[in-house]
Every structure is written in C-alpha cells, then in structure tokens.
Amino acid sequence: MTDPDAQSIFRQVCDLVEPFNRNKVPLTEETTFSADLELDSLAVMDFVAAVEDHFDITVPLNLLPDLETIGQVASAVEKIIKGDNSGSV
Amino acid sequence: MDLFDKFSPIIDAHANLPADAEDPFNVSMDKILSPTEAIIKGRHTILAGTNNYLGLTFDERPLKAAHAALDAGGTGTTGSRVLNGTYAGHKALEQDLADFYGQQHAIVFSTGYQANLGVISTLAGPKNFILIDSDCHASIYDGCRLGGATIIRFRHNDAADLDKRLRRLGEQGSNILIVVEGIYSMLGDIAPLREIAAVKRKYGAYLMVDEAHSLGVMGKTGRGVAQEQGVEADVDFIVGTFSKSVGTIGGFCVSSHPKFEVLRLVMRPYMFTASLPPSVVASARASLAIITASNLREKLWANARALHQGMERLGFSLGASCSPVVAIKIAAIDDAVRFWSELLRAGVYVNLAVPPATPGRDSLLRCSLCAAHSPEQIEKILGVFQSVGRRLDLISETPRDDADAKTAVSRSTPDAAAATG
Image 1 (cartoon, chains in turn purple, orange):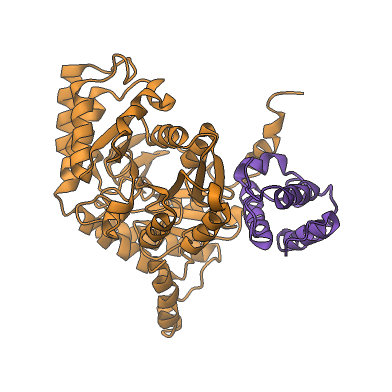
Image 2 (cartoon, chains in turn brown, cyan):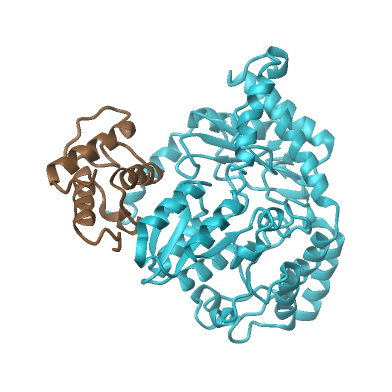
C-alpha cells in the first residue's frame, strides 16, 4: 500500500477525494478543498482520516492549515511515508 | 482590502437566510419566567433548548445562598485566583467537588470553556500527543491548539479507531492524552467509555472525560457517564461545567494525580482572568448538594423518554438513542431555519445548529430536556413539531407506528447498537 512514488501517491489521494467530490470537478494538484470542492473544515478532517487509513500513517490536525490543495496532501503523505512515519509536525 | 473581507461568506450566508424566517442567531429573551418558560418577542415561549437539565436556576436553595453571598462578599472578586481572587467560598467549592467525585483535587475555573482550555493546553505541550474524539467541543479543539501538542483525531465513539491510531504512533507514543466527552452536546449520544478505557490501559495513556452534559444527568449519584459505566478508576481527569445542570456559570477539573495542584501555577486561562463572584460560587455549592441527593434525574429521564419516543412516532430522524438531548435531523439548512422559526412563532424555543457546527451533513433542531418540564409542556412541544413538520412537508401525515407497526422492530436495532457503542 505504501508506495512512495509521488505520482502513485497523487493518484491514490485523488481516489480518496472522489467520495467527497460532490460537484464532480476535475481533480488536479491545484484543486482546493474549500473553493473548488466546497468542503467545510469537518469534511476536510474526514477526508484526512480516510487518507490516514489508506496509507496507514498519522496526519496530525496541526498540518491541516497547510493542506489547502490535493497536491499539498499528496506531498505531505509522501513526506510522512519517506520520513519517520511519525506524523510529528 | 479590509480585515473583515475574510468573513464575506458568513456575512452573505447570514444575509441569505430565508426572508420569512426569524434570525436564529439573534434571539433575545425579553423576560425569563422559569427554567422552562420565557417571553420572547412578546410571546409566551416554552424553553426546550437551555441545557438547564435539572431546572435549578430558580430553585430557592441556590437562590437564597447566592443572595446571602452577594450581600456578604460583594458583587465580584476583581481578581485572579492566584492573586486576590480566591475566597473561602472558592476553596469550599473545590472541596465539595473533590468530595462529590471522590477525588483528591479539584480546581475551579471561571467558565467550562476555560477549564478545557487551561487543563488541556497545559497538560499536553509540544512534545506530547493528544487523541481527541472527532465530535469534541470547540473548547477541547481550542485547548489542543493552544498547547502546541501533536493533535490526532479519531472517529467518533470508535474505540477500535482510537486503538488503530495509537498503534500507528508506535514507540514515540508516550505521554499521550486521550480526550472524550461523556454525552456529546449536539446529538446527545453517549461515549462508550468502557471500550475507550480499555484502549487507554493498553497503551498506558491518560484519559480525560468532559462530563459537561452528563454531570447531574447520569450515574448513581450524578457524577456522569464514567460513573454510570463503572470506569471512574480509569479516568485521570474529569472536566465539567456549572452552566448546565448546576444552573450557573463556571468550570472545573477534578483529579487524583499527586502533582495536580501545580497546574494552578501554570494554566494561563486560570491565572489571567478574574475568578467567579461569590454569589455564583454559593449557588454552585447549593446546587451541587441538591444534585447529590435528589430524584430530579428520574424526572429528567422520564421527560427525555417521552420527547424522544414522541419524536420517533412522528417520523422524525433523530441523532441518537434516548438521552436528555434530542436532536432532530433536517437535511436542508433552509428547511431547518424555517422549521426553527415556525417553532419559535408557535411558542417553542429549541437550538438550531447548522454545519459545520454539527457532525455529518445535517442541520439539527436540538432540544434539551429539563426535569422541570411538565407533561403538558412535552405534549405542546410534540404538537408544535407535528404541525410545523407536516406544513413544511418534512414528515408524513401519518404517525409512524400507525403507518407500519413492523418498523418498531427495525427501529430497535440502531438504538441497541448505539447503546453498546
């Protein structure tokens, strides 16, 4: 499951976004959660929980202010997988 | 550019509320008549959204105690607990709380919000981890942020999810604080504390339970959900408030940790604010004594069952199994605002909650029961919900048990599941 390849991580993150993509907008690295996907803060936290479970990692809430786009989530996941997998900020 | 530009979406959303509805965020009580009645916009109104669970706000014992303390101690302390703001009454209230919970220590704060802010932010600092239930109150989220700990959120009332997240932390997961509530304020659902306590023991974490909505409401002597489920020995810190069943304002934390008292010297939300006025302290003490020995809990739960069952019969979708918070789920915000507004015009006040302040996507018409509600008031509340619900086409014209007796069987399933967590 934990394939550290950036492109693969991005694709997996996109798959995880789909259930939250009510307006079926096309997903790119620049797609934002608030403006494009119209997710409120609670929905973003639920999405992050799905990301954590899929990759079996910890994404602390402290990171949330820096996760505005799908690309930012994908690179955060990559960093956590390649790093100590601790989820520390 | 304007500092207020960032609020444009909120200003717009507020302006776009249905024009025929009352403003749900600008209710003013012209006159409060009793724990369950007020005059709002000239109308006699039943209050069914106050968190005044035991109806003690007008009880003569706390009233009398407050009057006496006001005369003896003045209108306010004008000082911090760590300077000139600790009177004999504050110390006595802390001793009362420690005795009530059977714990070694108690610290009283000026509000429940500050209790969570103070204790959580101080206990869990930058090198620590906090695991919080996703539905925790804003004061818990804010306390987590203020302290600078690493914050991890687990799925609501899901001990297995908590376990999984603790496992992921592995070796580095020492000095972990788990924070949950007893009864969750919005949906009124109850935490599976036995399961959560088992996970806590497995990982050697600390457990804090916010019993804000369960103090005086659950447990043999009213201590809350931890007492009800027999897990008090596993709870390291209990936080609570005087602004619900105790009927005044203030917050507290109790614990038997041997070093607990040091928190008084390091908690900024405790130190850098004025202490509770003597009259508030006196009424809290008097109400706490009533909570310890009274049958108000039985009355409260009888009312809760009557309203919960009545709402189910009418065909409303409810947030949880029976508790003194009965939350009616409404899918569309505009429907919820109209519904709430019609209830108010018909003389029934409940709380309106809209996303993201609610779990899930629904808006909520949140009722909270009071031991002082009469059977006639419960009937009136149900009658108004029925007529407004049908007029807005949100429930069918036929009560559920008439329409299909078989649903009683299927309905018992989710309740049973919720009860066992």
